Length: 116
Image (cartoon, rainbow, N blue to C red; front, side):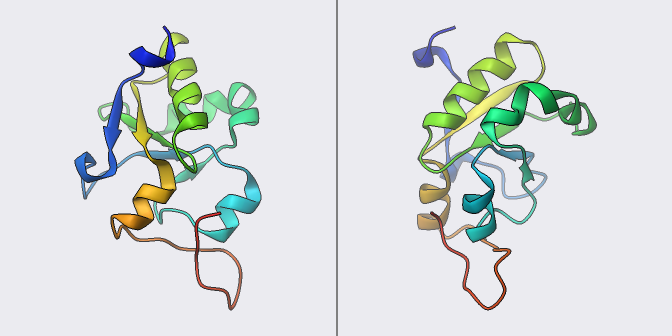
């Protein structure tokens, strides 16, 4: 599978409820701001932690997000090729998520959430 074959969806096409979202950004990016219900597994840790994805609902697509869509495209391509998940890349990543007005939470006390 090449990057042009990775299933992709825009933020506006994502379901507003029952969304299964995997954030593959680095810990500092996650702490600054992330989707409230997202699961966090950094891209570099994905192969070692792939078994954790078995705990997610398997009757829905797994949407994969990063900052702008590059890392999540690689993650979705790997997940699909390995047969681990029905993964869909989120075009534009968390930058588009924030621009579209989707909820954002952060882990830094006293600092408003932001997309790094």
